[in-house]
Image (tube, rainbow, N blue to C red; front, side):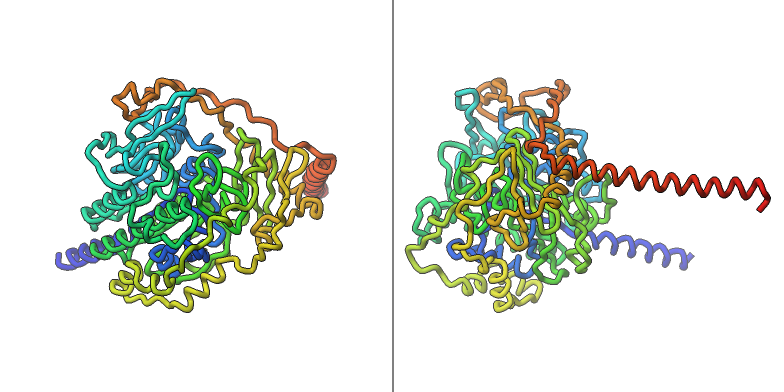
Length: 596
């Protein structure tokens, strides 16, 4: 009897120890944050010390790709699938549009729920709001506090959207399914307070998945675009351009938020077993309809274009047990689902595009991702794909969004504060030093910053009239050697062009095409007490997608010859195997006939 009790105690303790191995996960998303808008990338006019300390102490993902718009990026994250497989590619979902991640898709929080996680979303959703079953608490989140549309006013929490020539406006701030009427304060601070409350009240005997999706530094959701807290404007007073100063204030408030969240994780004594991820959903919008005066320099293009400035994002992962480094392997937003499910102890789902990158990050194993679909936008008619060092862009790309922007925004009028002092004095550095006894190596941090800043790029060497693709010809770049997409290799490497074009054609054919956005007058919040409620019944028929549009690159004679060669080679190889099998069968038959 005593032996049985001892065995039971051992089993229970083993089970308990296995449960404690499940890490907490805090996933933080910045909205429209540019490559050049964090100081660990070398920015010399926006300082982000809390973000930087975590990045330097964690794994910086130097070749992290998102999609180029918010809905596409977020739907790829939550499903582990390219947005074009879901019909969520291209421009983000409008508040008056009946569209969302298909309910047949299982999202990341649902996988984690099944593994025993407590799951919470604070902040932005933007992957479906027209029907109730598109909303967060129907898709795997135990709780939701935030806004469901693509942007919101930072002070009134209203979303204003033009629909068929009329302005629709209403409240877009909810706790689960209930509108929040009595909230006051700046949105970034409100979302931070909610995240802190969730951590403070969390039952630490179960693992936590907290997804914090900030509005900052996206432009506001109404007629006023840039609305930082007042104290953060003063902190960036050395920036000469007034709009850039306001944008910097939004980034500063975001950086402070991370320090506060770290503090609560430390107070609850769960920081050492918490994975913290920080990413941008896509690049900044220095120009365009959602202009926020961010900077993607020295990368090319803006949010919503197929260039690196739109798709190559800010990203790092931190955990107390992981050695700090810069990871130069390809990493895509779809990779988070299999990576985090694996870390949580679950089975990685099949039929997804994401790749489990945990062993690559944690153990320096050989990178598993060798290529990535950067974007397909069938409504605008373009696509971009990367394989190894090379990236191909095809289609009718808007020349106005294809340049290098924001240089004029970076002028300083006063001396910038000491970066080293800000690193050493910020909340993040203090917390990890006091809680985990980790001491920031400033010299190493500065060395990483120099490596990440792309200081080897001479602005005078950037082609002032770089390639812009058309239906007749695309653009090809060696991104490893030419991250600014300045030196077009299309005419130099015809075999590679044909190979990558064929890969894009195959992906294009697999796409679930989008309809042109159809804004529904029934969505008008004036019908619902000026609140952005769902207005379509769950069982109402979803319109069938249209036919896949024509591939946006004319077929060349060389491409046809290449395709014929591939098919002929395949036919020849299959014929040789068939003949070889026939000969083996014939020999067996003859041997049996003559009793050999």
